[in-house]
Length: 523
Image (cartoon, rainbow, N blue to C red; front, side, top):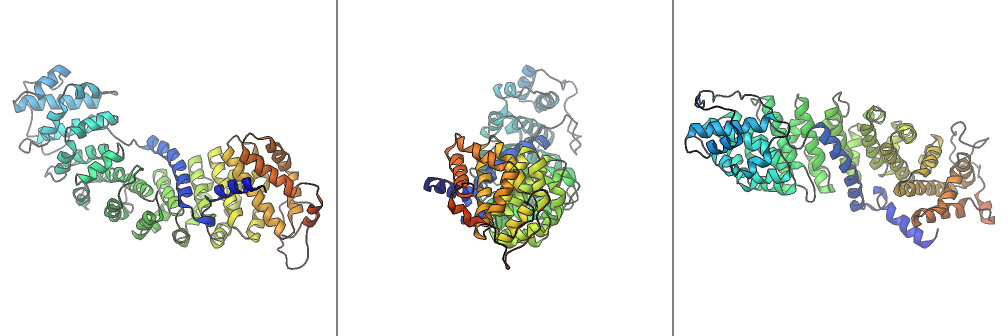
């Protein structure tokens, strides 16, 4: 192969965990998948949430507003009453504000913010002698914090975060719940708000709420807020934050409520999306057995984040990958790779690709679990995003597998779908496929079996596609295609050395029907 192509190929192959342990490359691949998963997660549950318009059930019923003051005020009347020194007027104004922000599909958040009453609402959070006013203000601010980043930061800039953290210790459960909800909205806004919320001391009082006596509806909000404290990267949550939250998450993923389990799993998926030290911290919390168990759950909302967490763990070092295998996670992958949801198929194939990037024994575990035919089937029938991950799984196997394992790959019929996908428009995937073919041919040549493999590539139309790629606009694709043609498909005398060797001692395997020249060959 020309030297410049060799350098390019070497750079790409750094993303294979088994070759150079280049964690920067592996993290880049996780980031690519993360973007897609965030979109899927937003469809299932928004990062921020607005309260539905229901009357609160609380021990505050004795604190009612003056019946002479209407509770459905116009915005000017709301502003006037909020700024009125009379507590009854304040309560009427705040309650009307809360209702206005709860009812409408597109609530007038900007109008409320521009009116200048947000600091007053934050001030009311400290009214310990008027718990109804405190609660209504918290509810209104929760809805404001559910808006876009600018709207959320209006609450932050008004001093809402430390006030809400203080309310986590309130004797009134509904007030506590509103504080949890508001802080979850703020933490979910991004890394800056997340870290500021943590800096204001949310973690300990939030974790103190997790008790057997806590109502499930409240526990769901607590867990969701914890997940938002773990969310977002660049930077990721501090290592100290992760260590503080992990014991609680290990407990919450074993809860009987599916929503609690789901959000706890999402939190773990965020915490495992990092370097090996962060992955190890999660592993040390003892969550792997439960995460593996959840791969077989009937609840999609639990399977998706559990699979994501497992997939992240196997991007770590070989020891971390082995722990997942030791807990028999692969037994669930036949269902995952054939799941009706294409995103589950994609995530499963992505996880397998990280396992086949490991040691030969870990590759063998994939083969022994009979997953290779299913991965190949995803390459053939899956949606494109799933096909790409299946291609990576196969290519990683060819980079680190033994001759016998690569032989099994050929026998299972991987060559044709690999060649068929050479026509995709995405240059990266074309180069990955060419890498796989080059690895396969190189392994075959080492045991003098390149000629029959070349015949198989030609028979399935691969040679024509590789020849066409010599005209590709991308230099990398061109060089790889040229190298394969020159080394394995030219008519030079050197190729006479590639004749099959059927002497005793070579690895024999029975090729699949219609994929191997008549008579078979040894490999």
